[in-house]
Length: 361
Image (cartoon, rainbow, N blue to C red):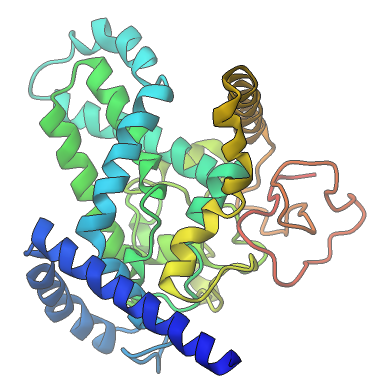
């Protein structure tokens, strides 16, 4: 009986995914062609210049990531809806409106470059909060769950996690930049991200502190103790250097990322990873029947979220210049909390995830 239920459960999930792919194809039929083009371009590079030698194309859970890619058009519908809601509620457009008079003074020829810098800066902070604010990490942890990095692993992303670019997008719109220009920046960031996830041995060496590269982003995904909580920048490492979250071992050390993934107990199947961040939400459905209590609960949650954001923005940080293991946490329950490892204990803890505290003592 148990085997029968297990078989029926797997069959139902497979049919659900196939149905989703069929709907996604109706929304955007170019996704298959795009995947073929990316495979033709990036797969040979991964074989010629591999960072992790011996990693096969059919590595564990690659079908999961292909499923995320094929379902992309359908998942993006939910993602865009969430992006609009989060973009408005983030109030990132308010500082944008405040900056609009200054943006109006920028020469037209320089506006795209200034807009790109502003987009990348806001993107740095939203990405950092996606790691260091526990509620946001629930969604972003899906993207960091792959234990093998290649170009297709970049597609493993929860549709609600994509809203991390929403504040940057709305900030530019509020500041007076053209919406199409902001959209171009977002698309560029997505394409760049796929290349940065590729299993290629690329590093700019002398330009490491000027332009991001796959090595920079692979260290961001590394689960090694001294790498956790670093390299949040998308295209430019300037913000990581400025705010103390830059990590890149010296060239002479010949050190490469050797371990990826997280210690959070994420399901290994596609449907499970999509539903994981929302587990337990059904217990709050009763709030809809009590509007006043529900409103108070939402406001309390928003206040706690802002507290976590402030703590993340003001936490002490370490740079690779010291090359020490920062103070860390022993659990994944919350990023900021009283159960940090004491100062005297500097031993690295195995199996930590990106939801662990990475600030200095």
